[in-house]
Image 1 (cartoon, helix red, strand yellow):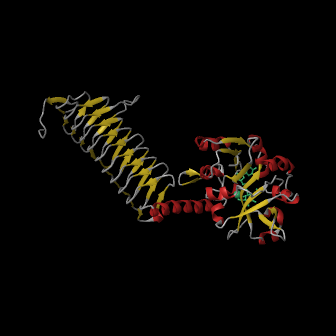
Image 2: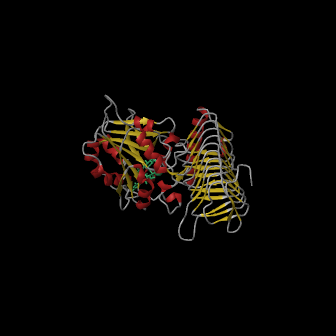
Image 3: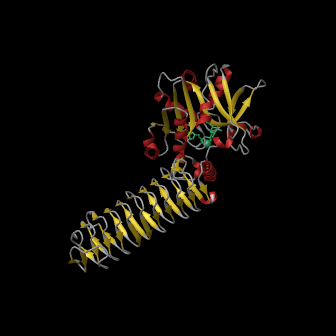
Length: 454
Ligand code: UD1
Ligand code: CA
């Protein structure tokens, strides 16, 4: 296989977004559009990826740092050709090809990018993706010779009104032979009207010297649409969303109302799970089989077991087991882990806690920094007082304990196995296993109580 470096052009301001944030950081289903471009490049089997950043480059670097790409700073930004010139020293000297894409084309697929790479006997110094979109707008127009060879690309700003009549447009993805770039990239001159160095002028230079230019026709030009404003951003978002939902429905997931459902393409959902309306499943989620999710749920970065029912709830960076019931109106904050057969009911907030098998937190509780044992029942209104104003402390409730309604557990504190607390108790000291604690502050009223006894 050929050795390829990919260059993603992402230094522009994105004036038409009317934003203080760089264009490529505007998100689709919670991820910056640049993330989707990088994902497509990786999917095409290319590992060496250079991102050209410029305008607010520190924000761009922070947003995609974990994606393992390298950054090149283009300062000032003098056009797409200038951006590639800036990236050139970062390209490995023994690369065969250089793939160039724009950071503002989040719908591009790995398959399309792969088709730009010449294989076998296909020899070409330049390969370029083009198409015939319904609304070509200001995209660069491709001019062909009488013998159907690509001759040059003319930007609308430089071509006059006649140029708009050309239907074939440059979609903004290219594959250049490395040796070609080495020789021709320094030859770019500033454009007449805008004074920018156009990457697209390389095509004209290749044609003048009768070099090989492959035009790769993209059947679905929307796939390569460049996002220039927020209307295009929402159109692209809609497409990513629909594609992800279609894939899930084909794989055996019921989506009751695709119009109001958002599921990130990174997330997986198991067979026979039903997703009810107004549900958002963000990036990094794994939902098991036969679950019922929604209506009105937001789940992000979380793992959900099988046969679990979640309604009207928010779950962030958490793990929920199988055969469980969550909600309505539960809020599981980062670091929550629940085992199987658990019930987390209405108006319950849980943070950084482990809830073991068969435990129930049915109503109106706050559980933070806690370990809740097997089959524990937490009465309505129970609060773990985990914060003393300076530090967070842990609450442990051992297996089979029964916490009376409105108990306050002043951490650090442990309620022993099988112990009980009376309604309204304020627990400031450990409750030994098998005993009953009541009052404010609670006192041990009885030791060695039997199951069912109060
Ligand atoms: C460009 C092409 C046009 C094509 C269109 C496809 C040129 C001259 N024109 O036009 O033929 O139809 O894309 O969407 O290439 N960028 C930099 N540094 C710069 C300028 C731009 O990194 O100095 C980046 C931008 O961040 C963006 C990409 O290059 O991701 C394209 O720039 P943009 O200004 O959007 O180019 P278009 O006018 O759309
Ligand atoms: Ca563009």
